[in-house]
Length: 430
Image (cartoon, rainbow, N blue to C red; front, side, top):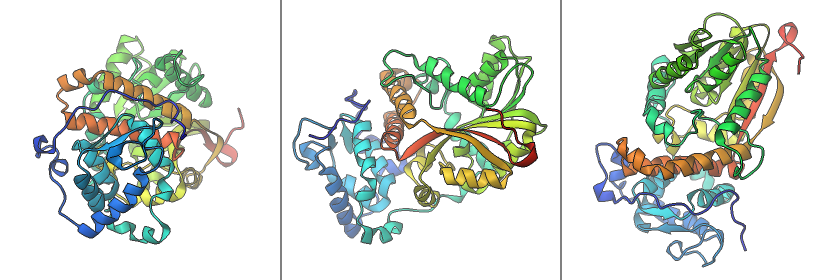
């Protein structure tokens, strides 16, 4: 009997969507089927159909063997499903879900099973044909100064109220650190504070420290650093996040210790005793990683240290993803790319930094995403009230489940690193 995926389970059905009712102006590639490509559709039907025939994916609509175990993936429109995948690969897979052409009673569980066997889906001789299913990333998504502002706006400026429907009261949008799994006896807010406090400790934050934060979020890390007595300069490109972060900081009586700036990391001014950047590198883009690490190094005063939290993937997967327009880059994080540990080591070393500590927490991110997804599902009525239609809701739930599956299958990891200057400017403190 195949094992159940830990931490996942049946959830409320996603809102029903019928392709004919999709707003074509808002979702053009969801509202219409791609042009027919019989040979590619046939290949997709054979390869993906074989993947869906695994014992761990059950249900008569998939053609799989019937079993009480494992998540159920149900195809409502198999022809459209395979046609989209045949034409657009994983983007088509996601758009088919957005169009309501397939569902699962355990979305994260089904995606975890598929992610765990990702390398087995396509036989080695056919991998040379990968170019038939993928397209290059749009040049408009490059993270130039103007492009970075646009890309950040398209995700983080969707609505502060939207993020509040699924984040905990700290409004922290990055992996938490838990004491046990599943997190039944610990609040997400407590686990987020544990993560933040560990980063503050890595960076040596205490009374009088000058801290630069690259990537403000909604201000929780800056608040906790200021409460320790640090003087914080925090940078963001999100107008919505900056406004709410300033409100929260003022309400806490810490406005004299925290300066929230709408500023690109490439335009950092001054030098600081510590720099912290939490899951910001993923939004930088591969061609700008040298600029990012150079900015970190340039901002450090002698003896300073950097605390970095970053999602990572395997190096070969990163190289493939860097050249590919993906479902996530199209609909969720335009211009983004998850680095590998090798890429972080290479680009940080080139900027004159060395890694002092490096720890991974994949299980913690899977648990964080599970809780976010459950809250998002539980607050669908509020999301609808904010003006987000069922297609958006299916897209967002797929994004959260897809990400959770990546961590559960160990396709993704999240690391906390302490970086210090190489050579005489470095320090050896724990």
